[in-house]
Amino acid sequence: QLQLVESGGGLVQPGGSLRLSCAASGFTLDYYAVAWFRQAPGKEREGVSCISSDSSSDGSTHYKDSVKGRFTISRDVTKNTVYLQMHSLKPEDTAVYYCAVGGIVCVERGGHYNGMEYWGKGTLVTVSS
Image 1 (cartoon, rainbow, N blue to C red):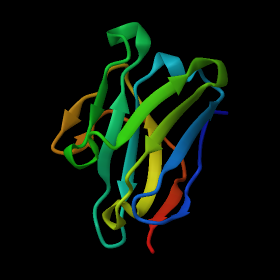
Image 2: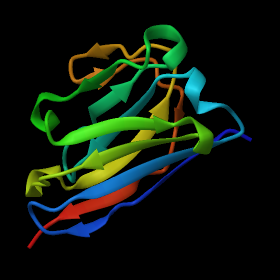
Image 3: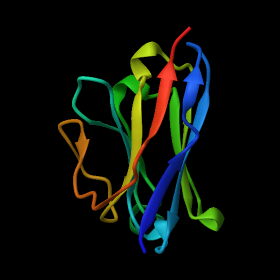
């Protein structure tokens, strides 16, 4: 059974850090592009970051402008997991964060990553003092 499970969310103060994990089972995550999305209350879901498969493009990465320099996406092949390291968190980063898998290359269009086929259930990140 193909499954993606996010973890690592929680409550953090502004300026703090969190590391989100996206663990896969039933398939090898390294063969696919993996993206992180988020959805804040009352807002549409948006793409945050994406990492292409190593086999296609040496694992190139893409970030939403507002998180560049603060967030880092990475893979651990041995753990079949993709991470999103988040630093200097802001209240506007508060959202449910989802990971998704699809294709082999990240395709960004209008703030969204196209072609994602499998989704996790999300983990809540709350940035508040």
